[in-house]
Length: 391
Image (cartoon, rainbow, N blue to C red; front, side, top):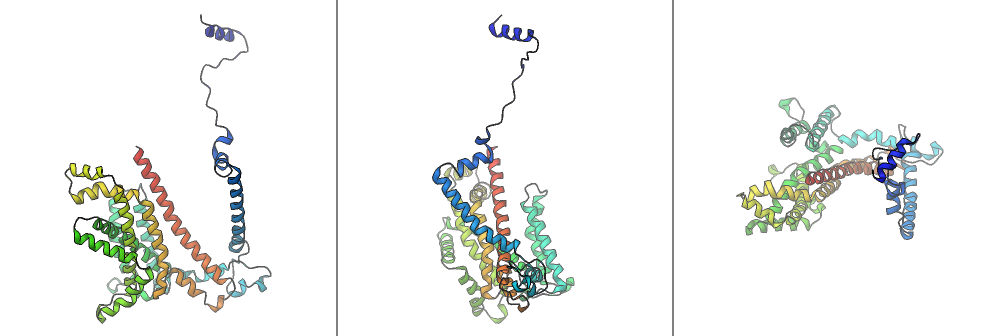
């Protein structure tokens, strides 16, 4: 009998002695070596200079955050029917945001001057857009092909007749001059995003084409559009373009702006996509050729799926920039969301020292929520694709 066997036998023979016959469970790591405490220690207080910078940063955040929170929430006025509710003399204390001003004008912020009796058409369009976006972006959504058909065909046609109207459908026509607010911002953003990506892909492929004319035309278009500010493109499309067309051929003012924004965004999108194409290894092209695939087959099935996956952050960044740049259409007289907020500030019934600050705070919150939602979805898509590559 070995020494270990003898010790176990002796231990089991003695009364009151317990011998473990199975491995003990793993103990959790020390508290200072894992979890949020370890992260804070390793990233924020890993050294004396790092700790000093962290404390200075926290102090700067405190100096900025406390006044903002006080203005937006603690000292804010939440109820009232006119400017008297938001005047410090009537309240007897410092006045923060005048939120009754926002709630009173919220209909104008969303619909502009769209007829009150027809706003259900805008609401229905928003619901249809939300269904299409969720159907396309939800990874586990069933019947994704039908979802794409709905979003790129059924929804645009339905929205066109709903918003503009059609006598034969019993919908009174509504001129685009009456559109405004969130409606215009969403129309510009959705159409610009939907059309800028495929057109940008074509421009990127054209710039890398072996055909001299195609490559030259793509380079000229991209460099010319990127060389001028968006305001110039908007002025050209909305003010100068009608000068070169006959009276009966002038397109709608909103349509001209949509085309200008889509073309401007497509030029930037082309460079983002081209970066992904250049990052592809040469072996991917040679592998596609070895399989007997033609140019377009290799691009659609081999190259572009991988290239677009590499540049997802750049694509989403371009989309976010496009969404925010829609506020520039106020220069050419289009009433987008930010313009309706600015126009509402001129209402004498709500003329207070804090009215303009409240309106701009509400506009900033709207743009932040929309842009941050796009950024969050981009990050989730990157994580999902990274997990798929590891399998």
